[in-house]
Amino acid sequence: MDRVAIKEEWILETISNPLRTAIQSDGRIRKWGYIEEVGKYLRVVLLEDGETIHNAFFDRSYKEESQ
Image 1: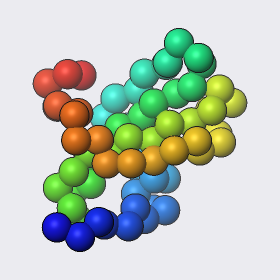
Image 2: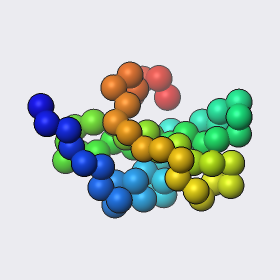
Image 3: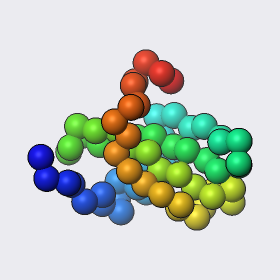
Image 4: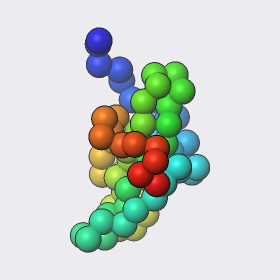
């Protein structure tokens, strides 16, 4: 399967309406969202300020029941 480019709208939707949010030990904030178009979970990592996007990727290890 070809890599799917992560759309900015998916990132913004995940930040605004996450399925789950977790704070890392370094203060960064992880948010997950499900992207229907590709059938995958997206993880967005924000810096401690809660606004700056550090990283975004499809999280193959995320399981819905792990919420």
